[in-house]
Image (cartoon, rainbow, N blue to C red):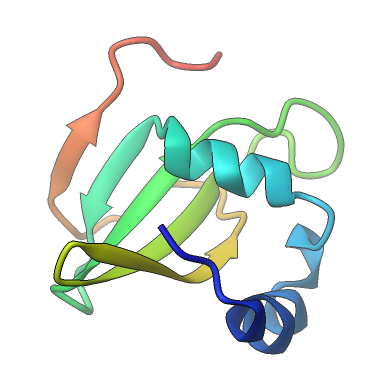
Length: 100
C-alpha cells in the first residue's frame, strides 16, 4: 500500500485532522485489519477497518482506511474514525480474532 505525502498533507490531515497523530494505527489497520469490505461507491476501492484505538476520545471507533487499487498496487485515499461499519458494501474478509 502506498500513502502519498500529498494525500496525507492535502487531504487526510485537512479533512480528518483527528487522525493526525495516529499514523501507526493507520498502518496497523492496513497490515492487520479486523474487517475488509468492498466500497459501495468505488468498485476499485476497499475499506479496511480495525479496532485499534484503545484509549481516549475515539476509543470505541474503528480506524477506516480507504484503499483504491490500480492493478496490484493499493493507494491510500483517506483515513478516519467512524463509530460503525458501513451499512452497505460486501464483506470480503473478517479476522478470526478481534482486537477486543
